[in-house]
Structures are given as structure tokens and as C-alpha cells.
Image (cartoon, rainbow, N blue to C red):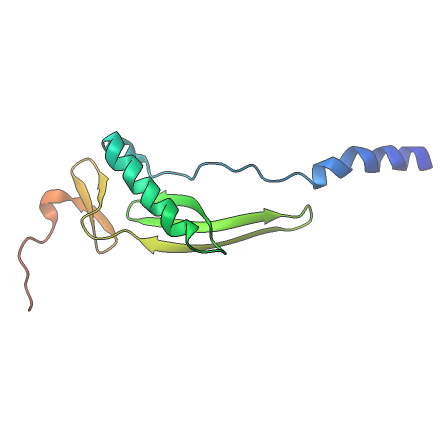
Length: 118
């Protein structure tokens, strides 16, 4: 019985100590239509923004006009995830002939051209 218990413990111990693999973030599908230079520049700027914060150091997810920085830790018993979301600046491209305005991805020609106040 002790031998069986030992084999079970030895078999499952490495599994509980495995680290989560670092994967690339889920990237918003519409960004695929952007020119490579634009897409690369956008990703670099988002990663730099995430890297400036010690508790959310990695770019985790990108959607329309928002990106999420954070981190995931797995100690074998608990998986801890923490994150913070940021909105892309107005005018940032978010797809073919689309830009971000007030956190929404809209067709470029639907953006407000005339300043109504001030």
C-alpha cells in the first residue's frame, strides 16, 4: 500500500509544479487587416504600457478599442489572475477603415468631423 501511495505522489507531484506557459495575447481579429507596421507599432505601445506596471506586466487581451494588462500565477494549488483594462486613444485604427472614438470602433466616415462645443 505504501509503495502504491509513493508512486501516486511521485507521478502527480511534477504536474502540480508546472508553470503556465507564456502565450501571446488574444488579439482583436479586426487588427489583422491593418498594415504590418501599424499593427506592430500598436502592439509595441500596448506592451510598453503594460510593462510600466509591476503588478500587470503583460499584455493579456486586445479587443476593439480596449486592451488588458495583467498577470497569471499558478502555485499548483491556486491560479491567481489580476488585470487592468485601458482604452485606446481616439483616432487609433481598429480595423479596415475603422477608428476608435470614445472607446468604440466605428467606421472612419462615421466619426464626428465638426467640433460642436467650445
